[in-house]
Amino acid sequence: GANDDAEIAQEDNSIREMYGPLKELIASCDRLIDIWNGNREKKCENIDSPNHPHINELRKILVLFDDWRAECGKNKEQFITKETWEDLCWLVYGLEGLANQELKDDKSRRMCQRRGGSDCCENTFAAYRQGNSNGTELDIRQMEARRGAYRGQGVSCFSRAVKSNSGREDRVDIVSLSAELNKKRKRENIVGI
Image 1 (cartoon, helix red, strand yellow):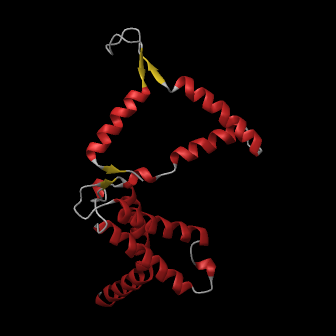
Image 2 (cartoon, one colour):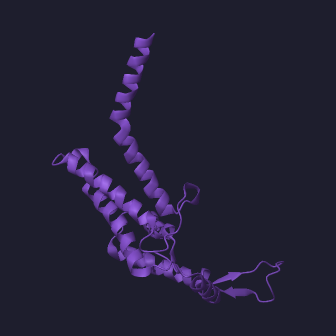
Image 3 (tube, one colour):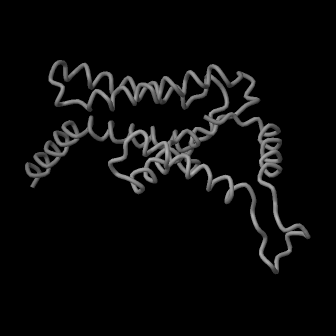
């Protein structure tokens, strides 16, 4: 009856209280990732001024983590690792510093924060590991020299297919393509990370 309903409601409230902070932390982490990805579906956009609302959101997320750190005190096992904490701080402070340095209050420039990843580095490291998982510095330098030689041949131009409509020339120079991309980017006033 009524007593059972009251007990269930009381249990629900205690569960909400117990898991509320965890839900807030998870939602904050999700929001941090959405902001960094510029996920438009989650109402995140490219940052276009030093005072953009996303920067304030990131600061609040950092404060949430800092409060958690303070609650843990000297018991370091109840908080994220020191390296993860430092990475989180650099993530927020770095983005804020870049926005203050490169963006203008008139919103004439935009930053595509999604481009701030490390995928290109990870691909390079994976290639090194695949080439020699226990390589010395000399081995890595030699692999990089070989990769550089291949890059010079294979990446400097595209070859057109025999039956393509790409024009009469056999090759397209990447340098000229890059120049056009750079002109376009300058027109759009996008500041990459």
